[in-house]
Length: 232
Image 1 (cartoon, rainbow, N blue to C red):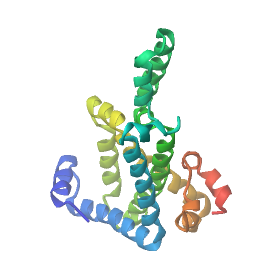
Image 2 (image 1 turned 180 degrees about the vertical axis):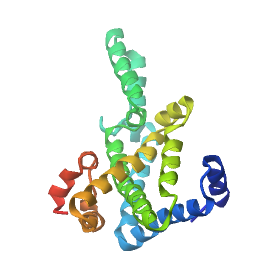
Image 3 (image 1 turned 45 degrees about the vertical axis):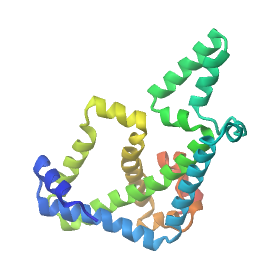
Image 4 (image 1 turned 90 degrees about the vertical axis):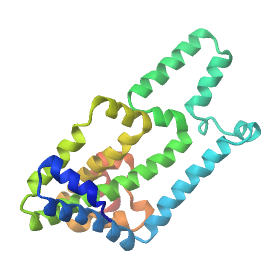
């Protein structure tokens, strides 16, 4: 569950108690074990989404006849860019290239490359992982408050670490889609904190019953919408 050298280095770099850091991270990882054992459908759901995404990408990387059968929604922005360069008029090319650049600046490069249909699969995976990671973050603090005297210092150190990445690294995260991973912790934790604050610990239970109970992108941003839909 744990990578010991990383934890030793993190404790030293952030000047926090190593034993308490290990306990805190252990709470996070044990929470994941409980999630997947308590919701047996979850592993298959995520695996199915990943399999569907990979299958669609294999089709797009096949021969020209296979790629030609793809819908507009399945084609990524790279295919559209090739079409523009192949013969579109200059005014049209400038307009669409400008839109591509603007979307890339907003962190949508991965969405452009994958295409809308595949991006919907990524969004579904992202929603599930935001719940999984956000819930583990919530439990870290809920249980840690009872067990760890240095919890405020641990949380402060972790928050600083996530926020203090250099500009080149932040740009790379955005280009490669790694920014999505960092948002899982923040958005998911805020969702779980709000749901439990509004409805108590049991309010989150519908999220673990079936794929239909998972929050959508909009519900992650507005947890009360999810509470209204699920009766949590």
